[in-house]
Structures are given as structure tokens and as C-alpha cells.
Image (tube, rainbow, N blue to C red):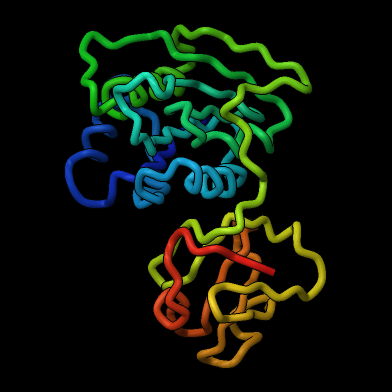
Length: 248
């Protein structure tokens, strides 16, 4: 029976050596634990936007999953701390720079630690491989590495966890040219229209509800508002880029 898996979420890109090196570091500690490549083209250097994607995807994974999240432009600096979070039965390992904001806020049962465990060799610029990967692997093997527990009451949270639960911007363009936003579709009731640039879009349930070539917005499979064109690229036709603002 599968008890745990390590799920990778990074802005490293799908090419180059970085993902492979991080996987190798995980497997040295947890050689029997499956590793899932969830996303390696998260918004580059943008932990805030990435936080909305991670939260949307994480909810579909079972308890016991360990998320190794690395979007870390401040690596090696004092601007963020290495952290472990335990939220609703799932673990999250990575930098305390906002990447876990939404996961934490949406969670019902959360614990948080500053990681104090240190490997024998720690580079200043690759904590994903040298620090976060071994910690995630240790968690997958049932070991909680040393850390400073941060207590939280119902009305007290660490200052970094302050992002709004809805983010009125495009946070990701998928390979089809669909534009994923930081908006929870559940927050929009009725047939509401959304504005992006000079385009005002109607809501539809799915692609076949509109004519080929028509643009619309819908609730995607992970509960976020997504902008699309039936059999076309919304990013190209509507000239959408990551960071573009959404209006009502």
C-alpha cells in the first residue's frame, strides 16, 4: 500500500540538470518512495503567483503526500527561512517566502516549523537539492527532521501568510494557451462576466458550450477560473500574459 509520495513543484524548468539532481537527492534517502513531477514551469521567481497554483493542485492529493516546493529567488539569503508545514495531513517543504501562503490559509489543521536540520554540505544557491530534498525524503520515510515549532492560535498566524484567497491576475499559461488565474471559481456565482484587457468574457461550463474560436471563462478541474478559446490559444488570440489583471 502506498503510504506517501514526494510531489515536486518548482520553477526550475523541464530542461537542464536541476530537477534530476533534486530527484537523486530524494532517492538517496528514500529509494522506494515514488516521485511525481507535478510542475516545473511555475511562474519564475514568483512565489506569490505560484502559491495559488500549488494550493489548487494540492487538494487532490491524498493525506501523507509530501510536496517539495521550490520557487526561491531569495535562496541563500536571510530574506526567508527553510520551513516544513503539515497541513490537513499533507507535508510542504520549501522556502518561507509566500509559496505556502494559500495552502496554509485554506487548511483546517496546520503546524509549522523552521527547519534547523543541516546537511554536511549545503550550497548557497541550490537548497532544493541540498536541504529541501533530503528533508522531504526524511518525511517520506517517517522521520521529522529537527526544527523550531511555531505555535499558532486560531487568530494568530505568521506574518508571511497574508495573501488574499483570490488573486485577480493570470498566474499560468498552459501548453494549450489557456490562461489560469488566481481566482477561485466558487467565489463567482451566477453567469458573471470577466474582463481581461479589452475583452469581456462570458462564462461557460466546458469548451463545447461555445462555438469554435469563441473565448470564454470556466471553472477548471482544480477549481480556478481559467480563460480559454474553443480549439484555439487564448494567450495568443487575446494577447494574454502571466501577470495580466482580471476585472469584473
